[in-house]
Image 1 (cartoon, one colour):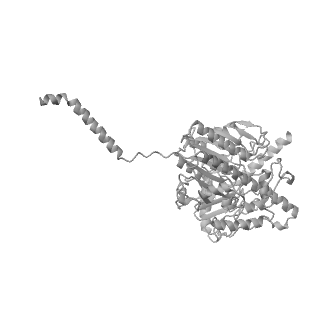
Image 2: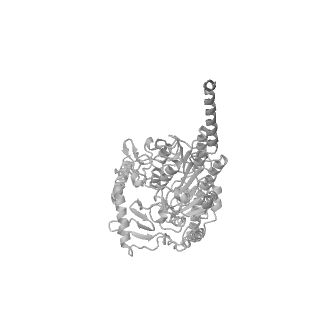
Image 3: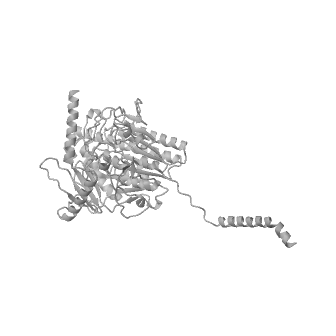
Amino acid sequence: MMSLIGKQNKPLFAHISLLVTLIGGLYVGCNQPPAQEEPAKPNIILIMTDDMGYSDLGCYGGEIETPHLDSLAATGLRFTQFYNGARCCPSRASLMTGLYPHQTGIGHMTNPSEHFTQHDYHVPGYRGELSPQTNTLAEVLKTAGYTTLMTGKWHLGMERKEQWPLQRGFDHYYGILDGASNYFRPAQPRGITLENDTLTIDDPDFYTTDAFTDRAIQFIDQSKQADGERPFFLYLAYTAPHWPLQAPKEVIDKYRDRYHDGWGKLREERYKRMRQLGLIDTGWAMSKQDIFDWDTLPKEKQDEMALRRAIYAAQVDRMDENVGKLVAYLKKNKLDENTLIVFINDNGACAEGGDVGGGKKENLETQVGYFLTYGKGWANASNTPYREYKHWVHEGGISSPLIAHWPAKIPKKLNGSLIQQYGFLPDIMATFVDVSGASYHSEKGGKQVPDMAGKSLVPLLEGSDRPIHEQPIFWEHEGNKAVRLGAFKAVMKWQEGEEAQQHWELYDMQKDRTEQHDLAKEMPEKVKALASAWQQWAASHQVLPWPQMLDSLHINEQRIKDKNTKS
């Protein structure tokens, strides 16, 4: 009987056993920690301004009203020693590829829309366009599933459509392909391009800074409507405050009476404020004024120069207002918490146009004109307290403000703090690869792509105070050279002429970042070591002697002149 009962109930026992196992498993599962979800990839916004001085923003010591960028700095981080590439297009080449500019084919300048061969010197490092054997930020971030958007200034090649943003990884583009345009009436060949088509602008209220922001917001909105879970990358490249000096009248009026005390007084004000903010060491002397005293100008010229500066300030002010518009959109749509915003500038303040600026004064406060600048005196003030300007590789030419804002990642206890470790433009690619999990490919079309030249900034964003660069970083532009390793920087200003003597200067950046006390004679072995490192770098990174490249430029310019004469 027992055996019979056992046989008859075997399936029942099996079911009971299975049920106990399942219940036990559920019990155990309830006591296990929940599986960790993979963190959502951040949206990334990269904002670059054009020709702005190191101390122009309020949070970097300036008097210009920039409340929105100041707010991002107060709830994020500021770098005190972030470096650019000294000039518009070499900087953009480094930013876009994570390489040194010569590795990208833009060792000098990009070919302009008027003359597509002007800066092609027929050697790999100097072709005047972005090499196809590079990875762009857009191409790389696409490997991590990002929608890639761009508005603003491209300046990396425009002769053929394969050089344009959509063919270099961007899903959508709106902006100017060349290096500058009229702000109110951009016209071809320096006009507006949407995707791969040129546009005619006939809106009487058009202003490029506004248009770039509005289109950026539209692109983000369309992206999120199409796929709300997909992260986006936006590269917003303002032309402000690059010349021409053009801004809406109501913004100019805010600064119309601000600058009549001149550039010397402005430098003193900024120097004092920067020391108070901790942006510069109290032991660093301000660099010498690089122009005649303001009081030597006649009253009429002072009025003109004060107006030029007021328009420049208005360009920066309007740019900040547009940053505020973008941030407000992010907050309204609950996108701000996990969006990494990086704000940088492409080179030091611009002294082009001479001591008192270029362009007819009659064109100021109009919507006509192209080359309208504020001159060396005001550029000297914009770069307070540093030496030199755009083109050169002393600190005034290569120092950029950098603001990083990322509430989901940057510890709140660090909000408003300063990062004293140095970085440079190639670090942006390494940082974005780090935060996105993207892949940087070592080959394209079966040909090798150079390794990334930068290091990720993420450890600094998380609070590390250790340097990220243990190897030297380098510069070369128009014969101006520099190398930095740790506290020391060797720098050479190119001197033109057969009899000119080229020599290295040496500065201790911890004690003298304003480069006032040349240590080259006191520390010749340090100079020799850094100069040797620079030569090795140049030999391996497609950098050629500037006199040779200058000869190529002159030949190209003569050909253009001869062609124009014949036509």
